Length: 44
Image 1 (cartoon, rainbow, N blue to C red):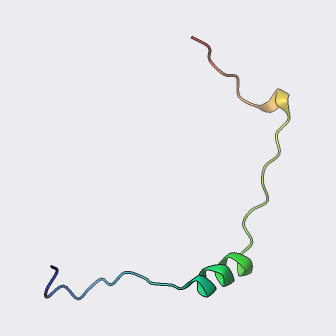
Image 2 (image 1 turned 135 degrees about the horizontal axis):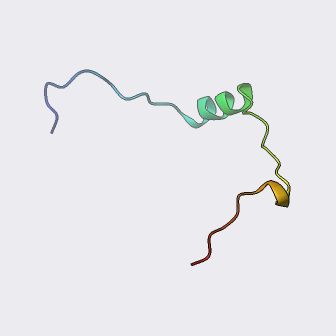
């Protein structure tokens, strides 16, 4: 179907690599908001 197309190749990872990346790079801590700080909802 894509004969002759050689670049760019998609990055293929297995489950072990995905889990290792998720554990090695901790994400930012979740932001906890109080009810008074949450944006108001618009009611139509």
